[in-house]
Structure formats: structure tokens, C-alpha cells
Length: 162
Length: 186
Image 1 (cartoon, rainbow over the protein chains, first blue to last red):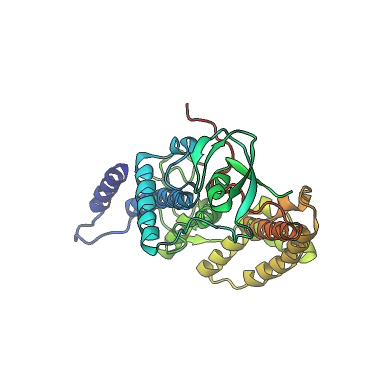
Image 2 (image 1 turned 90 degrees about the horizontal axis):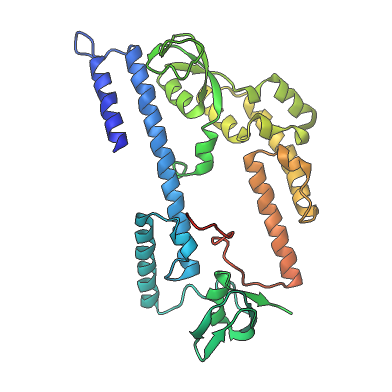
């Protein structure tokens, strides 16, 4: 809205500049208005780029956190961005369902169906694909890779290689 | 159009270049703060950000000169020892700005300078990136322009990935998007 009002002021100035023959005269008012206009366009570009780059980060977030945004990130997003995340997530999910192929698993090529993990944050009882487990802090477990992957990418678990 | 949203391009165009106004402009006294009137007189020399200078140049309202980072002194230093010239201090977007200025003024002399500088420095960048250990950050990093720093980081991360592949560390990792711990919003 601020842009529109600034543009209107600018337009009015440019109109005053027309000479007696009603042909536009390029005097110093014209150039002043031109510089203001260019500044507005520049500001617009900066804002657009900011929003665009944020949207890109939000899109890439979906591949990591599935459906639910972690709280500390959700705090920093505007309402429009939260809607964007929801819609993007839903679209991706329907695409995945159509393909019948889990696209967000195995982001790194797998070597082993099972891996050893250490739980970093208290998660509690969860239902994994073949068992109910209590994911207590500091517990070292042998889980199926596809189960552990979302927790690892959110930083709630870490993979142990020894 | 791909450059519209590119943050590096936006920042590169923010660099100042000297320009001489060929016409007068009202209500823009911010640009020329030497006198008190709210306007810029024809013939006055100011430093404008590149995006403004470029547009005005195309409309024949200013004539754009070479920014300070391309002056004789820098060119001499590059000829002497390109690898150690502190380009970041002069102009962190040295190469990008150079390319854009050439398009605007049609002065061909700057092309070879950029090329020579880049070739010598690129060699240095690659050598340093592949041989230094991960914890030591050489002082020469502070001399690199933005573009060179990106190349350096890319080379470093690929060396690190290679070492990791050979040694076999944990492959699944926390996603980089989630990054550092954040403080909650008050």
C-alpha cells in the first residue's frame, strides 16, 4: 500500500511537468521524479527477493520435517508463510501418494536396512513400522533406517558408526 | 530474469560508482549533501549506487566513470602480484561490477585486467582450499571477493566430503536447513 501512494505522488509530479504544448518536457522535476521512481522500483526488488528466498527455504524445509513445523521455526514465519508451507506440504503429499513412492526417504543412498542411533532429545513412546518403542534420551537403539531418518534429519537422533 | 531474485546480484548493484550529472534533478538532495538545496545541479559529481547510475546513464542523465576499485593503483597491484591484492576491501563484488561497467561504458580495457586477476587468484584459491586442514583459516581469506569466497567454500566442502567418504563417518545428518539453535521469539 505504501508503494501505491508513493507512486501516485510521483505520477502527479510528472504530470505537472508537461510544457505549454502539452508535450512532456524533460526538466529537473522530471529527473527528480525519475530518481524517486527508480528508488521505489529498487526497494520493490529488494523486498521481492527477500520474500522469494524465504519461500525457497520454506519449500526445502518440507523435505526435512514432513508435515509439522518445529516450534522455533514456526515462530519466525508470517501467517502467509505458514499457509504456504501447509499448501506446499499437502501438494507434495498428494504427489507422493499418486506415485506410490516415498520421495522423502533415503535422501542419502542406503547401505544397510538397519542402523544404530543414539537418541538426543526425549521423544517418548512412538509407533515405528514394526514395534512400539520408547525413545528415551541417550538411549542407543538399533532401528530400521526408514524409521530413524526423519528423526536424524531433525536433529533429534544421531547416527553411530562404531 | 534469473538475476532479479538473486541476492548477490542485488548486493553487487549496491556498490557505489562515480557519476557526473548531465542534467539537474529536483527533490533529490540526499544524493549530493555538499550544499543545502534539495536538488542536484547539472555537472555535479556524486557517488551513486550502480543500479541508479546504470538507469540514469541509459536515459542520458548522467555519465558513469570507473569506480575507485578499478583505478590505476589497483591495476598496477594486480600486475605485480594479483594473488595478494586485498580486493574485498576495495570492492567485494569486483568481478560482477567490472562486467556490468564494461557493458555500460563499452570500455574494453578493463576486461584483460579482470581476467588476469581472476586467473592468478583462482589458482591460489584452489591450492589453499584443497591443502589446508579444516580448522585453520588462512589470512588470505579476508582478501577474497564474494565470488572467490564462494568458490573457496565449495572446494572446501567437496574436499571434506571426499575425506568423509574415505573414512566412513555417519552419513545421515541433521538437515542444514534447520541450522543452529534459535532463541525463542519474546
